[in-house]
Length: 359
Image (cartoon, rainbow, N blue to C red):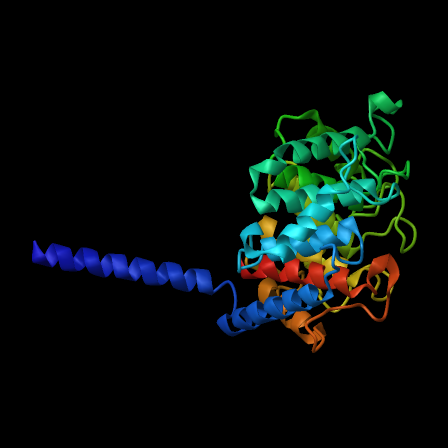
């Protein structure tokens, strides 16, 4: 009996040690410690920049992202931690409109509402349930379909735009999909199937895209037939946004759309630039989408098309550590397009990226 007990104890200890080592193998422990410190420094910078009304840059969108950075951090901040959390929540609630949108601007209502309900959900506070559900309804209402006179064969069918622009795009689509996933929208809601029509038509995959424009590299454009970097070129930030959209909408990892997107990522693996984009444009947006899509895909390593293995957590941490300023902030000084000259926005994106790395 004693021998059996010793054997069981040894086996349990061995399995526990193996489990810990297998988990730790997904990221260098030294880099993980540095990533934790970097997030703390980034959050400290954001707190120093917070306006008296609790917002960052007076923007619903940026405030939502900064709030999410706090709530999803390893520190697990909550409203109990004080005004630096409760004030931004109240700032968001003060911009709730009758139609369910949450925005200070009519031109960015989808973007702002999507990131706002994602942040409110992250509080875990049931008081915001109705506000979140109203936000979901608003996002669903923006989706172009039969109610708007769009038939299923139209290239924009199922798409969602900024909310003030009639043209949908994959960036806004992915943010809406992420928000509806985060807020546990019914997986049987028709919005998912319609969204996948638009997402699939934004992919350069002629085998699964029923529109003639598509090439066959597996990456994603900004919208069907168009990218801001020329023609309908595939590029990094949108390919990761497309991959997230497919996975969050319930598409299996073995689906050819997912596999072709991942193969594009393998063939274009880099963190030195937003691959396929004009120099340094959307760089931190790319890092943010990269972290979220790799986390959702669930593989610790990416083997590129040359057979070289990359630990994406280590790679992204090293890149972000090298770009963080001494004050704890991040910014894109080479390309301020798409607000990447705003330190509050870029710092929030970077912290959210590292939060996914640390998990």
